[in-house]
Length: 226
Image (tube, rainbow, N blue to C red; front, side):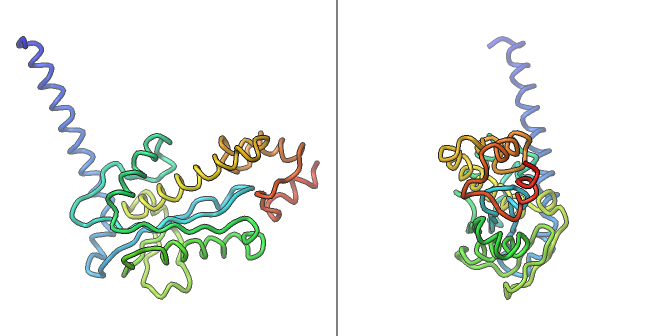
């Protein structure tokens, strides 16, 4: 290896080292709440996905992360590419102390309203954890009837690694489900819109009417305007 090649290699290694240091510092900055409540025991992050779509379930993720080593690159799932979310999902599922998923389908959303359905999905996610958590960090809301102390954090998926991990697990799980549903109901393009009310989705809804996945309470006005 020439001196020039060696210099370039060292420059590359230095850039990698600096990027890693920067990411470690960013991740530590997202562990403020985890450190603040460390004396409470096992801390669980909770987030939901799917409150706004016209079709499909609302889902929640609950994640207890390891204390001994941080998972890098965690962030609000909406700020990550689909490829990065998939990569982090695999890391979370492999390294987390526990992961729980909650799911409430469209029929139940119509019956009890989206807020209560969201709470129910979150409680299901908590119930799916083993071991059980001692303290909850929750994105934006306080979950009723958990029997556990909790701290709601506005925009928590961008402020807490635990909530960020939960948001990634919930979104990847729901996105994959909606992609499966796309094969059953291709006219609505669920693989692309994930059930959200895009112009293409609304046009298909007006043309074909609803399918069994649609939330009746969410689409009444759209159907009235046909």
